[in-house]
Each structure stands twice: as C-alpha cells, then as structure tokens.
Length: 137
Image 1 (cartoon, rainbow, N blue to C red):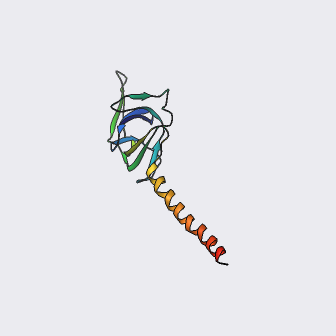
Image 2 (image 1 turned 180 degrees about the horizontal axis):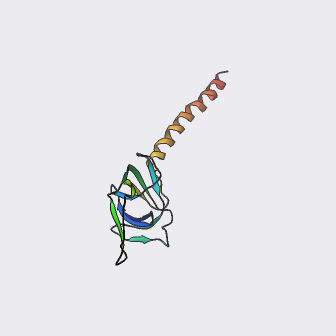
Image 3 (image 1 turned 90 degrees about the vertical axis):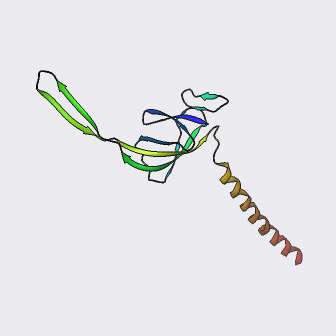
C-alpha cells in the first residue's frame, strides 16, 4: 500500500517503513506524528484520489532526526555592472519513518481491543462480590 502526502508545500509518495526527509516540523526526536494531508491512497487493486484530500485517510510517522541539508551556493551576478553576491544556505529538515497508512478513519485497533477486555474483566468480579455478600445476610 502507498500514499501520496503533502508536507511543506511538496508531495511525497510513501509506503510503510519508508524513510523520508521533509521540511522542518516542530516535533521532538522519537515523537509520533499524524500526517493528515493525504492526496492519494493506492495498492495493487486500485487507487483512491482525493478532491483535494482523501476523507478519513492519514499517515502515521515517527521522527527519527532533526538535521540540516547540505549547503547550496546562491550566486547573483549582473553582467558588465561589477555586481556579484555569493551566499550559502542550509535548509532545516526532519527525517521521518513511515509507520502506518490508515484509510477510512481507521485507528490502531489492536491497542484498543487489548485494553477493553481488561476493564470488563476487572469490573465483573467487583459487581458480583457485593451481590454475593447481600445474599449471605
């Protein structure tokens, strides 16, 4: 499965476990992000194209690193005017690892399913105990 996401004014085609470098995002290293601007989702069977975004789709990613790109040289010149300017620039980047592509508003269902039965099991014995004590009296 793949998705086309928009981040920092650019579009990226991503799949699970891809590592991409996007323009700087305000997040700590190791933080999980939800990228909600999904333009297209597809797999072997077909694609879903948004207008402009796909409803309910998001991409889950983990921040691996905050870094700076290599230096580029910005050189300006006007001929015959003795005008030359030379500057350098290093863009700030965020390195992301794509964890999961979620479609149709699906969330991580595995975590919720595990948590729900534990609460139900703990609540059931507590409710039965007062009823049993009331019958004894």
